[in-house]
Length: 340
Image 1 (cartoon, helix red, strand yellow):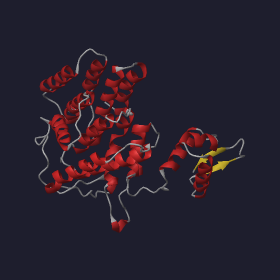
Image 2 (image 1 turned 90 degrees about the horizontal axis):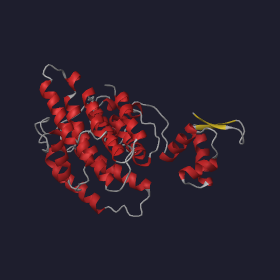
Image 3 (image 1 turned 60 degrees about the vertical axis):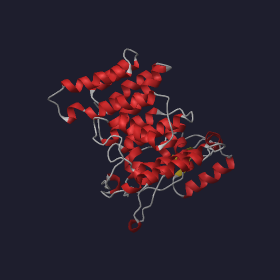
């Protein structure tokens, strides 16, 4: 089943329902969308089962039972036809996201991996005991340097201890997102598990974000989970000879869409190391997004939308024109902004 089709079906519950029904639909959207991290697609049977749960006809235990039974009787199948891993892990992610319990420590991360992949990966819930590389499309086949397996437990303890010591009190949203991105990037790069690492980290981070009271934009993971993984790759890759260095800005854009319902254009092509573009700041990107939605908008209105002074916006937009990011067409009164 195409991702766009299942996403459309489940999104209808979010648009037309309220309360617990919406929450269940959002959890399913995130859970199924995350399978795209590893190129996995859900079966039509999973979507129908998800709809039964969202509508309140069955609980999650029954949903999991149905999926398990489905694959017991479906003997003559291929991976493409069955999507067994995608279906089973989607149910388990939905169950984890529906639970309110959460403990911020490495044991919780390991337990999430165990719950997601028991019976699927033989090393579910176990720290990897060997080193490896992964050839990445966005890096032209090169790999991120992951933590040595001997250092995994110590590295996790260090990053979790650092995060526990950090105070989010009185921090702006910008500061909060930057710090959360750095923490997420760090534990992903440690790569405690050889398989299922990104999905495990994603579920852990979502549950962690919910402890802050964030309203998670489910559409971000539902539609852009592969971008999420690729942004983590770029946040942890450097190649001095090619003048390429760690770039966490891609991950920050993802988090802004996830937590602030921003509208950054999350295209995987932008993440490729050979992609050529004019680099610009998050503030400049915010202005570009606003102009994209309303080319005739005034600078006064832009200032209100991004919570900056008019003087700051005028200065920034002048620089953006000098950098040939935007230009002005026609008069000040009746003209409009053009994105270059």
